[in-house]
Image 1 (cartoon, rainbow, N blue to C red):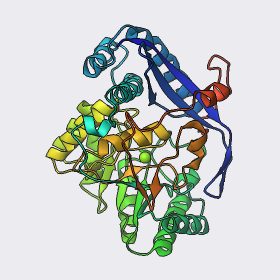
Image 2 (cartoon, protein in one colour):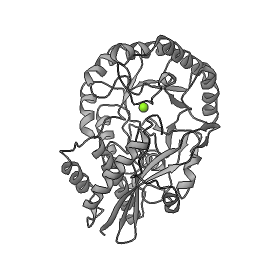
Image 3 (cartoon, rainbow, N blue to C red):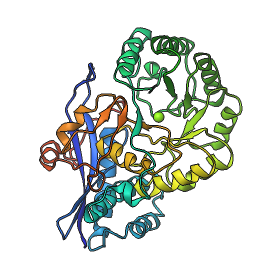
Image 4 (cartoon, rainbow, N blue to C red):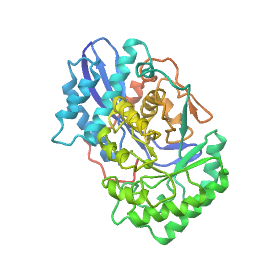
Length: 397
Ligand SMILES: [Mg+2]
Protein backbone atom coordinates (compact mmCIF):
# COMPACT_ATOMS: atom_id res chain seq x y z
CA UNK A 1 0.00 0.00 0.00
CA UNK A 2 1.22 3.50 -0.83
CA UNK A 3 0.15 6.93 0.31
CA UNK A 4 -1.31 8.94 -2.57
CA UNK A 5 -2.16 12.16 -0.75
CA UNK A 6 -1.95 13.81 2.66
CA UNK A 7 -3.90 17.01 3.11
CA UNK A 8 -5.41 19.21 5.77
CA UNK A 9 -8.92 20.60 6.13
CA UNK A 10 -9.66 23.80 8.03
CA UNK A 11 -13.35 23.83 8.76
CA UNK A 12 -15.58 26.23 10.59
CA UNK A 13 -18.54 25.11 12.64
CA UNK A 14 -21.02 27.96 13.00
CA UNK A 15 -21.87 29.17 16.50
CA UNK A 16 -24.57 27.30 18.33
CA UNK A 17 -25.88 26.40 21.74
CA UNK A 18 -23.80 23.79 23.55
CA UNK A 19 -25.18 22.25 26.74
CA UNK A 20 -27.66 25.06 27.23
CA UNK A 21 -24.94 27.67 26.90
CA UNK A 22 -25.04 29.94 23.89
CA UNK A 23 -21.57 29.44 22.47
CA UNK A 24 -21.47 32.63 20.52
CA UNK A 25 -18.32 32.19 18.51
CA UNK A 26 -17.69 30.07 15.49
CA UNK A 27 -15.53 27.07 16.20
CA UNK A 28 -12.63 26.00 13.98
CA UNK A 29 -11.16 22.55 13.45
CA UNK A 30 -8.14 21.22 11.56
CA UNK A 31 -8.46 17.68 10.28
CA UNK A 32 -5.92 15.60 8.36
CA UNK A 33 -6.80 13.20 5.57
CA UNK A 34 -4.32 10.60 4.32
CA UNK A 35 -5.39 8.62 1.23
CA UNK A 36 -3.88 5.40 -0.12
CA UNK A 37 -3.82 3.58 -3.42
CA UNK A 38 -5.96 0.78 -1.94
CA UNK A 39 -8.86 3.06 -1.15
CA UNK A 40 -8.28 3.24 2.62
CA UNK A 41 -8.40 6.74 4.10
CA UNK A 42 -7.03 7.65 7.51
CA UNK A 43 -8.20 10.61 9.58
CA UNK A 44 -6.23 12.79 11.97
CA UNK A 45 -6.69 16.09 13.76
CA UNK A 46 -4.56 19.01 14.90
CA UNK A 47 -6.98 21.86 15.82
CA UNK A 48 -4.91 24.43 17.69
CA UNK A 49 -5.07 27.93 19.14
CA UNK A 50 -5.65 30.81 18.64
CA UNK A 51 -7.87 29.17 16.05
CA UNK A 52 -8.27 31.71 13.28
CA UNK A 53 -4.52 32.18 12.85
CA UNK A 54 -2.90 29.03 14.24
CA UNK A 55 -5.27 26.62 12.49
CA UNK A 56 -4.54 28.21 9.12
CA UNK A 57 -0.80 28.28 9.78
CA UNK A 58 -0.61 24.63 10.80
CA UNK A 59 -2.79 23.65 7.87
CA UNK A 60 -0.33 25.19 5.40
CA UNK A 61 2.54 23.51 7.26
CA UNK A 62 0.92 20.07 6.98
CA UNK A 63 0.13 20.52 3.29
CA UNK A 64 3.79 21.23 2.56
CA UNK A 65 4.96 18.21 4.56
CA UNK A 66 2.26 16.12 2.91
CA UNK A 67 4.24 16.07 -0.32
CA UNK A 68 6.91 14.01 1.49
CA UNK A 69 4.42 11.29 2.24
CA UNK A 70 3.32 10.49 -1.31
CA UNK A 71 4.63 7.04 -2.26
CA UNK A 72 5.44 6.06 1.33
CA UNK A 73 4.10 2.84 2.84
CA UNK A 74 1.56 4.00 5.47
CA UNK A 75 2.49 1.05 7.66
CA UNK A 76 5.93 2.58 8.28
CA UNK A 77 4.56 4.82 11.02
CA UNK A 78 7.67 5.04 13.17
CA UNK A 79 9.91 5.76 10.19
CA UNK A 80 7.59 8.45 8.79
CA UNK A 81 7.36 10.02 12.28
CA UNK A 82 11.15 10.28 12.40
CA UNK A 83 11.45 11.40 8.77
CA UNK A 84 9.34 14.49 9.49
CA UNK A 85 10.75 15.10 12.97
CA UNK A 86 14.39 14.99 11.87
CA UNK A 87 13.67 16.65 8.54
CA UNK A 88 12.29 19.77 10.20
CA UNK A 89 15.10 20.20 12.73
CA UNK A 90 15.99 23.70 11.53
CA UNK A 91 12.41 24.92 11.83
CA UNK A 92 12.10 23.46 15.32
CA UNK A 93 10.97 19.94 16.06
CA UNK A 94 8.56 20.76 18.90
CA UNK A 95 5.45 22.84 18.43
CA UNK A 96 4.32 23.20 14.84
CA UNK A 97 6.36 20.21 13.70
CA UNK A 98 5.17 17.89 16.47
CA UNK A 99 1.59 19.05 15.83
CA UNK A 100 1.90 18.31 12.09
CA UNK A 101 3.40 14.91 12.90
CA UNK A 102 0.53 14.27 15.34
CA UNK A 103 -2.21 14.73 12.75
CA UNK A 104 -0.39 12.55 10.24
CA UNK A 105 0.53 9.88 12.81
CA UNK A 106 -3.09 9.54 13.98
CA UNK A 107 -4.21 9.13 10.35
CA UNK A 108 -1.54 6.47 9.73
CA UNK A 109 -2.69 4.46 12.77
CA UNK A 110 -6.25 4.80 11.49
CA UNK A 111 -5.15 3.35 8.15
CA UNK A 112 -3.29 0.51 9.85
CA UNK A 113 -6.31 -0.38 11.96
CA UNK A 114 -8.60 -0.33 8.94
CA UNK A 115 -6.14 -2.45 6.95
CA UNK A 116 -6.04 -5.07 9.73
CA UNK A 117 -9.73 -4.60 10.65
CA UNK A 118 -8.78 -3.91 14.28
CA UNK A 119 -9.27 -0.95 16.61
CA UNK A 120 -6.02 0.84 17.34
CA UNK A 121 -6.02 -0.20 20.99
CA UNK A 122 -5.68 -3.84 19.95
CA UNK A 123 -2.56 -2.94 17.97
CA UNK A 124 -1.02 -1.12 20.95
CA UNK A 125 -1.03 -4.04 23.35
CA UNK A 126 -4.71 -4.56 23.97
CA UNK A 127 -7.20 -3.21 26.49
CA UNK A 128 -6.53 -2.94 30.20
CA UNK A 129 -10.01 -1.43 30.82
CA UNK A 130 -13.46 -1.52 29.28
CA UNK A 131 -14.26 2.19 29.33
CA UNK A 132 -12.54 5.57 29.36
CA UNK A 133 -13.37 7.90 32.24
CA UNK A 134 -13.85 11.49 31.08
CA UNK A 135 -13.79 14.88 32.66
CA UNK A 136 -15.30 17.92 31.00
CA UNK A 137 -15.68 21.69 31.21
CA UNK A 138 -18.42 24.07 32.15
CA UNK A 139 -18.44 27.29 30.12
CA UNK A 140 -15.67 29.37 31.71
CA UNK A 141 -17.31 30.72 34.87
CA UNK A 142 -18.25 34.37 35.00
CA UNK A 143 -19.44 34.48 38.61
CA UNK A 144 -20.49 32.15 41.46
CA UNK A 145 -24.10 31.82 40.23
CA UNK A 146 -22.92 30.89 36.76
CA UNK A 147 -20.65 28.07 37.98
CA UNK A 148 -23.28 26.79 40.40
CA UNK A 149 -25.72 26.14 37.57
CA UNK A 150 -23.23 24.61 35.15
CA UNK A 151 -21.41 22.49 37.75
CA UNK A 152 -24.73 20.92 38.73
CA UNK A 153 -25.54 20.22 35.06
CA UNK A 154 -22.23 18.38 34.71
CA UNK A 155 -22.73 16.28 37.82
CA UNK A 156 -26.31 15.49 36.78
CA UNK A 157 -24.93 14.22 33.46
CA UNK A 158 -22.93 11.63 35.42
CA UNK A 159 -19.47 13.17 35.45
CA UNK A 160 -17.24 12.75 38.50
CA UNK A 161 -14.81 15.52 37.59
CA UNK A 162 -14.72 18.82 35.75
CA UNK A 163 -12.18 21.51 35.02
CA UNK A 164 -12.49 25.28 34.92
CA UNK A 165 -10.40 28.43 34.88
CA UNK A 166 -11.97 30.62 37.58
CA UNK A 167 -9.55 33.43 36.70
CA UNK A 168 -10.59 33.56 33.04
CA UNK A 169 -13.19 36.26 33.60
CA UNK A 170 -10.45 38.84 34.05
CA UNK A 171 -8.71 37.97 30.79
CA UNK A 172 -9.76 40.04 27.85
CA UNK A 173 -7.55 38.59 25.15
CA UNK A 174 -7.95 34.87 25.56
CA UNK A 175 -5.96 32.40 27.59
CA UNK A 176 -2.66 32.47 25.73
CA UNK A 177 -1.18 35.72 26.93
CA UNK A 178 1.44 36.53 29.56
CA UNK A 179 3.00 39.86 30.37
CA UNK A 180 3.70 40.18 34.08
CA UNK A 181 1.91 37.08 35.43
CA UNK A 182 -0.15 39.10 37.89
CA UNK A 183 -3.85 39.08 38.71
CA UNK A 184 -5.77 42.01 40.17
CA UNK A 185 -7.00 41.77 43.76
CA UNK A 186 -10.61 41.99 42.55
CA UNK A 187 -10.16 39.22 40.00
CA UNK A 188 -8.43 37.01 42.55
CA UNK A 189 -11.24 37.41 45.08
CA UNK A 190 -13.81 36.62 42.41
CA UNK A 191 -11.84 33.51 41.41
CA UNK A 192 -11.86 32.29 45.00
CA UNK A 193 -15.60 32.95 45.25
CA UNK A 194 -16.15 30.90 42.08
CA UNK A 195 -14.14 27.95 43.45
CA UNK A 196 -16.04 28.11 46.73
CA UNK A 197 -19.38 28.18 44.89
CA UNK A 198 -18.37 25.23 42.72
CA UNK A 199 -17.44 23.13 45.76
CA UNK A 200 -20.64 24.12 47.52
CA UNK A 201 -22.66 23.16 44.41
CA UNK A 202 -21.20 19.68 43.89
CA UNK A 203 -20.33 18.49 47.38
CA UNK A 204 -17.11 16.87 48.58
CA UNK A 205 -16.79 13.89 46.19
CA UNK A 206 -16.60 15.57 42.78
CA UNK A 207 -13.09 16.35 41.54
CA UNK A 208 -12.67 20.04 40.71
CA UNK A 209 -9.66 20.66 38.48
CA UNK A 210 -8.32 24.20 38.18
CA UNK A 211 -6.60 25.37 35.00
CA UNK A 212 -4.29 28.39 35.27
CA UNK A 213 -3.38 28.20 31.56
CA UNK A 214 0.31 28.94 32.25
CA UNK A 215 -0.48 32.59 32.87
CA UNK A 216 1.03 33.42 36.25
CA UNK A 217 4.38 34.24 37.80
CA UNK A 218 5.74 32.15 40.67
CA UNK A 219 4.34 34.10 43.65
CA UNK A 220 0.93 34.65 42.03
CA UNK A 221 0.52 31.02 41.01
CA UNK A 222 1.66 29.85 44.45
CA UNK A 223 -0.78 32.12 46.23
CA UNK A 224 -3.73 31.18 43.99
CA UNK A 225 -3.10 27.45 44.34
CA UNK A 226 -2.74 27.56 48.10
CA UNK A 227 -5.84 29.69 48.58
CA UNK A 228 -7.87 27.27 46.44
CA UNK A 229 -6.59 24.31 48.43
CA UNK A 230 -9.13 25.30 51.10
CA UNK A 231 -11.83 24.00 48.73
CA UNK A 232 -10.06 20.72 48.11
CA UNK A 233 -9.29 21.26 44.44
CA UNK A 234 -8.08 18.09 42.72
CA UNK A 235 -5.24 19.64 40.74
CA UNK A 236 -3.85 23.04 39.81
CA UNK A 237 -2.87 22.97 36.14
CA UNK A 238 -0.09 24.86 34.36
CA UNK A 239 0.63 27.37 37.15
CA UNK A 240 3.40 29.11 35.18
CA UNK A 241 4.36 29.40 31.49
CA UNK A 242 5.85 26.22 30.07
CA UNK A 243 9.30 27.56 29.21
CA UNK A 244 10.86 27.45 32.69
CA UNK A 245 10.79 24.16 34.55
CA UNK A 246 12.68 25.87 37.37
CA UNK A 247 9.76 28.26 37.89
CA UNK A 248 7.45 25.23 37.95
CA UNK A 249 9.77 23.63 40.52
CA UNK A 250 9.50 26.67 42.76
CA UNK A 251 5.72 26.51 42.62
CA UNK A 252 5.58 22.73 43.04
CA UNK A 253 7.68 22.91 46.20
CA UNK A 254 5.48 25.60 47.77
CA UNK A 255 1.91 24.55 47.03
CA UNK A 256 -0.53 22.18 48.69
CA UNK A 257 -2.59 21.15 45.60
CA UNK A 258 -1.40 18.52 43.16
CA UNK A 259 0.14 19.89 39.96
CA UNK A 260 -0.66 18.85 36.38
CA UNK A 261 1.22 20.00 33.28
CA UNK A 262 1.77 18.90 29.72
CA UNK A 263 -0.53 20.39 27.09
CA UNK A 264 2.26 22.76 26.05
CA UNK A 265 4.97 20.07 26.23
CA UNK A 266 5.71 18.33 22.98
CA UNK A 267 7.29 14.90 22.51
CA UNK A 268 8.86 12.62 25.10
CA UNK A 269 11.94 14.83 25.40
CA UNK A 270 10.05 17.74 26.95
CA UNK A 271 8.69 15.44 29.66
CA UNK A 272 12.15 14.34 30.83
CA UNK A 273 12.70 17.33 33.19
CA UNK A 274 9.15 16.95 34.51
CA UNK A 275 9.73 13.36 35.57
CA UNK A 276 13.36 13.73 36.59
CA UNK A 277 12.70 16.75 38.85
CA UNK A 278 9.38 15.64 40.37
CA UNK A 279 7.60 18.63 38.85
CA UNK A 280 4.12 17.18 38.35
CA UNK A 281 1.67 14.78 40.00
CA UNK A 282 -0.17 14.29 36.67
CA UNK A 283 0.90 14.77 33.05
CA UNK A 284 -1.56 15.83 30.35
CA UNK A 285 -0.04 15.78 26.85
CA UNK A 286 -2.33 16.54 23.93
CA UNK A 287 -2.31 13.72 21.37
CA UNK A 288 -2.80 16.19 18.50
CA UNK A 289 0.16 18.37 19.51
CA UNK A 290 2.71 16.17 21.30
CA UNK A 291 3.35 13.67 18.50
CA UNK A 292 0.25 11.59 17.91
CA UNK A 293 -0.68 8.08 18.97
CA UNK A 294 2.92 6.88 18.70
CA UNK A 295 4.23 9.57 21.04
CA UNK A 296 1.36 9.54 23.54
CA UNK A 297 1.93 5.84 24.13
CA UNK A 298 5.65 6.46 24.73
CA UNK A 299 5.03 9.36 27.14
CA UNK A 300 2.45 7.26 28.99
CA UNK A 301 5.03 4.53 29.43
CA UNK A 302 7.61 7.02 30.70
CA UNK A 303 5.05 8.30 33.21
CA UNK A 304 4.20 4.75 34.23
CA UNK A 305 7.81 4.16 35.24
CA UNK A 306 7.55 7.11 37.65
CA UNK A 307 4.09 6.09 38.93
CA UNK A 308 2.64 9.31 37.52
CA UNK A 309 -0.91 9.15 36.08
CA UNK A 310 -1.53 10.45 32.57
CA UNK A 311 -4.63 12.41 31.58
CA UNK A 312 -4.61 13.45 27.91
CA UNK A 313 -5.58 17.02 27.13
CA UNK A 314 -8.32 17.86 24.66
CA UNK A 315 -9.64 21.23 23.63
CA UNK A 316 -10.62 20.35 20.10
CA UNK A 317 -12.60 17.79 18.18
CA UNK A 318 -13.77 14.20 17.87
CA UNK A 319 -10.55 12.74 16.46
CA UNK A 320 -8.62 14.07 19.44
CA UNK A 321 -11.03 12.39 21.85
CA UNK A 322 -11.20 9.06 20.02
CA UNK A 323 -7.49 8.71 19.28
CA UNK A 324 -6.63 9.60 22.88
CA UNK A 325 -9.16 7.04 24.08
CA UNK A 326 -7.64 4.35 21.84
CA UNK A 327 -4.25 4.86 23.49
CA UNK A 328 -5.64 5.12 27.02
CA UNK A 329 -7.46 1.79 26.62
CA UNK A 330 -3.98 0.24 26.79
CA UNK A 331 -2.38 2.41 29.49
CA UNK A 332 -2.38 1.18 33.11
CA UNK A 333 -1.54 4.60 34.60
CA UNK A 334 -4.51 6.44 33.06
CA UNK A 335 -6.48 8.99 35.12
CA UNK A 336 -9.19 10.60 32.95
CA UNK A 337 -9.49 11.91 29.40
CA UNK A 338 -10.47 15.53 28.88
CA UNK A 339 -13.38 16.61 26.70
CA UNK A 340 -14.46 20.16 26.01
CA UNK A 341 -18.12 19.75 27.07
CA UNK A 342 -20.30 17.07 28.66
CA UNK A 343 -22.62 17.25 25.65
CA UNK A 344 -20.52 16.48 22.57
CA UNK A 345 -23.47 16.14 20.20
CA UNK A 346 -22.17 19.12 18.23
CA UNK A 347 -19.57 16.72 16.79
CA UNK A 348 -22.26 14.51 15.27
CA UNK A 349 -22.70 16.41 12.02
CA UNK A 350 -19.01 15.92 11.18
CA UNK A 351 -18.62 12.21 12.05
CA UNK A 352 -20.22 8.95 10.94
CA UNK A 353 -21.56 7.97 14.38
CA UNK A 354 -21.89 9.70 17.76
CA UNK A 355 -19.33 9.10 20.49
CA UNK A 356 -20.72 6.49 22.89
CA UNK A 357 -20.71 8.36 26.24
CA UNK A 358 -22.71 7.25 29.26
CA UNK A 359 -22.46 8.72 32.77
CA UNK A 360 -19.16 10.42 32.04
CA UNK A 361 -17.50 7.36 30.49
CA UNK A 362 -16.63 6.81 26.83
CA UNK A 363 -17.04 3.31 25.40
CA UNK A 364 -15.09 2.10 22.37
CA UNK A 365 -16.29 -0.71 20.16
CA UNK A 366 -14.56 -3.00 17.70
CA UNK A 367 -14.65 -0.48 14.85
CA UNK A 368 -11.31 -0.50 13.02
CA UNK A 369 -8.75 2.28 13.33
CA UNK A 370 -9.59 5.14 15.63
CA UNK A 371 -13.25 4.14 15.56
CA UNK A 372 -14.90 7.03 13.71
CA UNK A 373 -14.74 8.57 10.24
CA UNK A 374 -15.19 12.18 9.25
CA UNK A 375 -17.98 13.19 6.90
CA UNK A 376 -16.27 14.47 3.74
CA UNK A 377 -19.41 16.25 2.55
CA UNK A 378 -19.47 18.19 5.81
CA UNK A 379 -15.80 19.06 5.47
CA UNK A 380 -16.24 20.28 1.90
CA UNK A 381 -19.29 22.34 2.79
CA UNK A 382 -17.62 24.01 5.77
CA UNK A 383 -14.04 24.37 4.57
CA UNK A 384 -12.55 27.84 4.89
CA UNK A 385 -10.18 29.46 2.45
CA UNK A 386 -6.94 29.82 4.41
CA UNK A 387 -5.55 32.32 1.94
CA UNK A 388 -8.31 34.84 2.52
CA UNK A 389 -7.06 37.60 4.85
CA UNK A 390 -8.71 37.66 8.24
CA UNK A 391 -9.05 40.12 11.04
CA UNK A 392 -7.03 38.82 13.98
CA UNK A 393 -9.10 38.05 17.05
CA UNK A 394 -6.91 36.15 19.53
CA UNK A 395 -9.85 35.42 21.81
CA UNK A 396 -11.76 33.51 19.13
CA UNK A 397 -11.88 29.72 19.10
MG1 LIG B 1 -5.23 23.53 30.22
